[in-house]
Amino acid sequence: MKVEVKSKKGLRTILSVIVDKKNIKTKMDERLKELQKEVSLKGFRPGKVPTEVIKNQFGKSIYGEVVDKILRETTTKAIDEKKLKVAGQPKIDLKQFGEGKDLNYELQIDCLPSVVLKTFDKFKATSFKVKIEDKIIEEKLKDIANQNKKFEDKNESEKAINGDQVIFNYSATVDGNKFDGSEGKGVQLELGKDLFLKGFDEQLIGVKKNDIKILDATLPANHPKKELANKKTKFECKILNVKKPKASKIDDDFAKLMGAKDIKDLRSLIEKQISSQYSKVLNSITKKEILDQIEKNHQVDLPQNLIDQEISIMTQSLKPEEKEKHKSNNEKLAKSRIKLGLLLNEYGEKNNLKVSDDEVRNEIQNQIKGMPGQEKMVLEYYQKNPSASQSLKGSLYEEKIIELIKSKINLTTKEINTKEAEKIIAGFNKPNVETEKRKTTSSPKNKSKLKKISKK
Image (tube, rainbow, N blue to C red):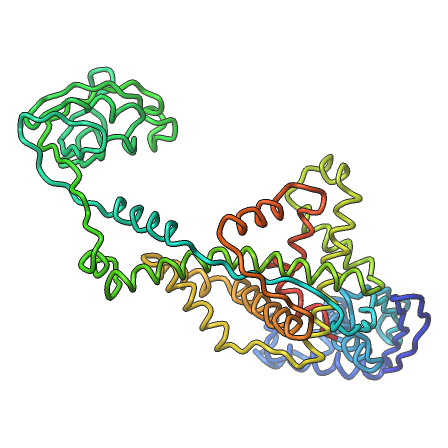
């Protein structure tokens, strides 16, 4: 194989590749011998069909198969030989081919730019540490208690009011006829939450134990049976019991029911949870501040094919008129994403940062712990979607890079209260033309790209 650089302009390189006809003939002969064991033709015993006969009948398709394989192998070798870092899929232009001829083709390659990183020691950013006030912790405690409240029986003569729990059996009809699911036993409703059917709860206000109450309701528009959607329905309800909420005592026993050691431990867990929620958002603000400086202080030539590919990914769900309307902004955003991806990846490689499979597994386990009751669903999601694990790996890789950069810059830590945190977050989330830019490296597609983008 002979490889020459035919032209080089900017980030685009065109290679001329010639594969000797003798090499092609050797590959053809090897493939014919392989097929001799597989092909079955009338008049010949299995495995005894002469290679010339096979060639006469299937020669064109076999040649195409062999050439296709040679192209795959030689393009990789040519790129490695010239030590090129490829951005996207190279284009092949066949110049000469055919049995008995040399294979001559050109390989058009868009290369990744050489990235020169500047030092980060003059960069400045602010990280935030939020003090969670006792008042907020107490409010959260009350919410938890309210969500887990218990009920006690009312006297039979006492009527149901908002906040009470009503237990009942029902029998429903549409146009006087029963339907599938028209009966229910032991239904429990907390009045005022309106969780059953719209307007159902308010009609139960005033009922007592052993009452029989006829209620009017409308079945939902998304009812599983289309013929019942939006149908007016009569419910005959037999009231089995009426209960009133029992005040929850927020003490050590309550804390243990919630999975904590005692009330002090529960308060501590609540504080950590709220603090973690604020930290996630505030860390993204600090990260944005750092990324803006990195982008502003570096100049990088970008391959057009990567820009086009990124725009295609970003706009795949948009209508043609929307794509055209935001064409300029989408291109700007695509360039920003790619530029930051290249810069961060270069920094990660320079510092030999890696993410192990164990780290990915640990992160998946952390996600599972954070979603009680949905552990199986989370685990199955990653097992069935290898791309999700790859995306997670990209995310962890990026976070490692950002943490290392933080250790190199002038990072000021500012202690704030929740009111100040809310104000900062509100300002960050205020809609403006740069909103999408904040997603530069936070989208899964871009995260997984950090490692892929620099492959040779």
